[in-house]
Image 1 (cartoon, rainbow, N blue to C red):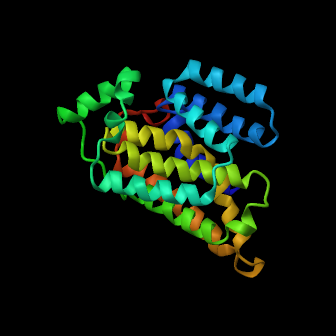
Image 2 (cartoon, one colour; image 1 turned 180 degrees about the horizontal axis):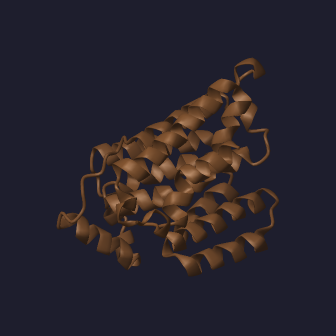
Image 3 (cartoon, helix red, strand yellow; image 1 turned 90 degrees about the vertical axis):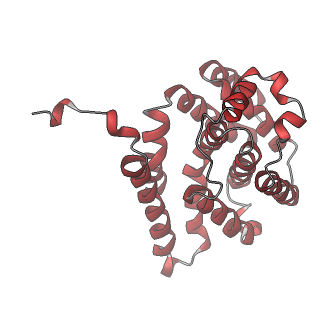
Length: 239
């Protein structure tokens, strides 16, 4: 129930209705994560190649695959997150420092837009990022207990990496940073409901309340606050 609710609260409305190609690519990446656990490398490779045909942002999957296959430690992710926050707050242009703009023309294009002031200022601590950090903190406290659950470790690490990349790319361009984060947030559909496993049965209404409230907040943001769907109309409500 929680996974479906979260899906319709953001993924469906944003990825599957607006950025459709990226949504399909994100879904294929999501499926590939489960094959990593089973060491079905050929299926992972096939899903990655198909995802790449749908959207260029699938390139980021290679970085995720490398970290997951090498079984990156939780402590390493913590260190990476600290560096990411320093980069974001200090506005260090790490992308161009390491020369990624030369390798990927799309990155250079986003960089040029940023220099010309063609995008709004990015809010580093918007409610989705704050909630994602909250989940990281809660799951970190209970990591030893949760890591034994099926697929939790890779899903949690992917979510952790998505937040790290959000902060790292924030100095490049708002659109690029948000799209990278949103591409990887599909793991939240399965990851966030693990919150239920932390609470005793008597008070399991608490994680349900938290996740439903978060889903409603996302829905409100997309429908009412962001005005993304203002241009949409339905024949059913025309008079």
